[in-house]
Length: 391
Image 1 (cartoon, rainbow, N blue to C red):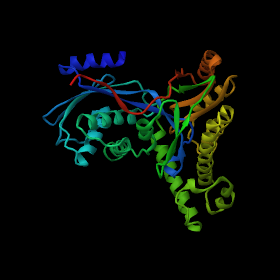
Image 2: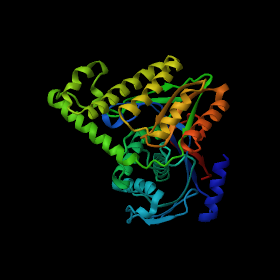
Image 3: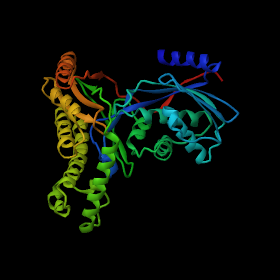
Image 4: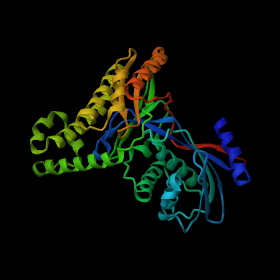
């Protein structure tokens, strides 16, 4: 509640009176299932206990005022002038949400909004989706729009795709909007069929470790990998037109099907997608059965596949993975997110947390010259209202 109270005080200082309501949307960590989303496969994210707060007060003049405790720039706009401007930076995310509501015929009346986020920026933990879902949840509520959360999730994705111009998949906004405390979400990205899987970690804890390296290559390599997968699917469909996506291929069928792909490089990309999708399903089974060691082995297999077949890890992520894998009490480690920087997610025994941090920090600094950042978030609920003032 201290963050909420501090946000309310700053809102009064900035806008002259108290906010009417405060909303929250979390960041997310993908436990396993990387680069399977745009290939029609399964992912296994969980909502985190850190995320984005937004305090809001309705206006009646069609004007929006947007500010953040993390960024100096403040943005004001009229309902009839919601356009992307590069110089607006972070504010383009809530602007995109406003744009989508208006585009879908919702007559927003305007509001003052103040954001406060604690998702590490550039870490691959969905800070942008967190901002978008916080804005979408708040704008819907204060304007009396009673849409189901899944519709707000789709709206947030459309805002990032169409307004911001980032072709993100559905996983990030889905996890932020649909998260459930102490559960991961087994999500099929094409159909949006999903189920919650309890995260009963017992004596183990999730530790997220940030490389502390900017993700400079992630965008260009992400687009390159998508193109390679699309090319591979086209080749496979010439002989197997029944295939709708790469994730339709079962691992046991891959040896027979791979002969239809001419490039060794593209075969490796497809092999990652096929095996990673299968690992997601096995991971959900392992966690449902309480077999944490099996899940840890699948995490390691996932990282090695991303390193060798998909080639999206890079020296910093590999250093974190390799150093963590040598530490007793760490039973699982892998990169999470698009790659080329960002974070690893690790499964560590609670009695070894301090030693894990000390040894991993020392080993990583020795190899890279960088100091990693450590986070110990819980697994929380999705986007929601957390404060409502007196009517």
